[in-house]
Every structure is written in structure tokens, then in C-alpha cells.
Length: 330
Image 1 (cartoon, one colour):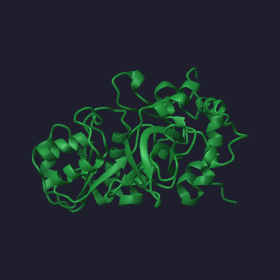
Image 2 (tube, one colour):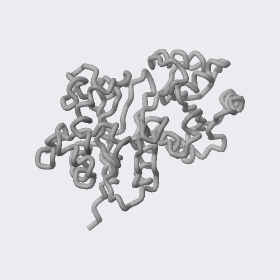
Image 3 (cartoon, helix red, strand yellow):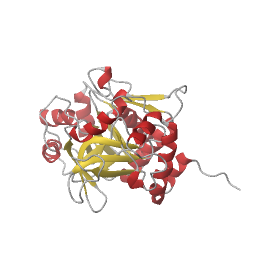
């Protein structure tokens, strides 16, 4: 008799099993993650009370800044540590990655589902503020995609914008993927407009205080004009996740089957948002098997009937403050 598939393998193997697997992952993380267990208990959501996926509690993302959010023993070292950007250690989220294999499979499969295998691309990255650091999850993902691509011209560009422009202007046998943070792409496009060919321009968000915040629609309009292309693509991810969603058009993201988006009421964080209304974004990322798969983010979003979603901005933290107060002494 063949050995049963591991939970890690089943997360990616069966797109229709996500609902069942979510309950299995919740039970595992409730037992293995002391922070998540106590948070769940204080909400009255222990193992005996969570029987449906709708009853699974979502841990406020802020906990990754203040607690060890891990579903593996404290005496085991994490091979990878992702940290968010921030001015002090206290302000930076930390994501302990127990399984590099699950991490890699998640970002590769997330990309393949939308764009095909990375070996069809020449990947050029413009990620100032990230690529200088050795602990940015975005850089880790892009480096992994570059490695899978295998193209000799793939690389990160900081100060050598002239070489980047030369590569973007030159013909390539593959489709070029230019991935960058918003402010850096705008700087590049507006310094001297380009007319790129056979190129996907993908923004990952982030003005990082370098430029005035603008809507995604305005960002895409200006980038499209600056690069001479009709469509700007988007990537949605964060330090606390191992999976990504992509928007090939119109800013409407599609998540892989093991990553589910739901919305909570802005004024009542323990209730779902009314159907058709803007809400605060909850994310189920089953690839986060060894940290926490159920995260209440600070983002505002809108869901569509086809399963796609939009990110509309950030909350003012008031919707999760109640949860934080309940667990302030954890």
C-alpha cells in the first residue's frame, strides 16, 4: 500500500480540497502554535467549537511584529527568516520559515498558474529598499523565479539604470518580466519614457514614503504611458505569507487554490463583511503551514463573483484594535 501523501503535498495537489484542508491545518496549528492557540481560546474558538471553516479565527498580522508566530518547537531553528521593512526592530514583522521547500513550491506554483514556467521569461527586478536587504521575502521570491528562469541577463538593478534601459530596449528571444516597486518603476518611466516590446511590467506596490500615494488606477495609467504598454500587471504578497496573488489586468487579483481571500466587517472584526461591500482582508494561506495560515491583514478589499479581488487601501487599525486589546498580555 502506498504511503499517504504528506499534508505539505496535499496542500498543492488538490485544488478542491482547500476547505477540508483548512480545518486540518487549523487543528494542527491550534495544537502546535501557543500564540495562535491562546488567541483562539480567548475568542472562544477552541478545537471543540470550530467545526466549519467560517469559524476559524484570523490572527491579526501585527502579532508577527510582537510574538513568535510559529507552529514548530521553539528549540528548532528556522532555516529562513523573513523580515518586513521598518525603522526599528520592534516595527518589523518576522516570519520564521521552517520549510524552504514549501516556500519555494508555493511561490513557483503561484507564478506558474498565471504566467507559466519562469523559463519562458527574462526577469529584471527593480526593488530598491528590498534588494539591499538579505531578509526580504519579495527578493527571495524574485531570486527563486530568476533561478528557475535560467536566463543569463536576469538580475537586480539599483544604480545601473542605464543598463536596465538598454536591456528593456533590446529585443529578447523570451518575454521580459520587469518587476518592481511602484516608486522605482515610476522614477524609471518618467525620467525618460520607453517603448518596451514583448514585456510584462509588474508592480508590487509600495511608495515607501518616496512619492505621494496614488490610486492603483492612476499608478497604472502613468506606468503604461511611461513604458509604452497597454497593460500593467500587479503582484500581491507580504512578509507574513508564503503565497502570492497576481493581477494580469485591471488590478483584479487571482489567488492560487490554497490561498483564499475573505472580508471581515470593518467595524466588527469577528463578523464577515456584508456581501458586495468593501471589507478588511482576511487571508487563508495554507502554505503557511509552519507559522499561521489564518491572518487578518491591514488591507481593505473588495471581492468579485468570479473569485478575484481588489486591494483598495489600508485600514486605520481600528477594526483590529479590539482583538489586540483582548490579547495585549499574551
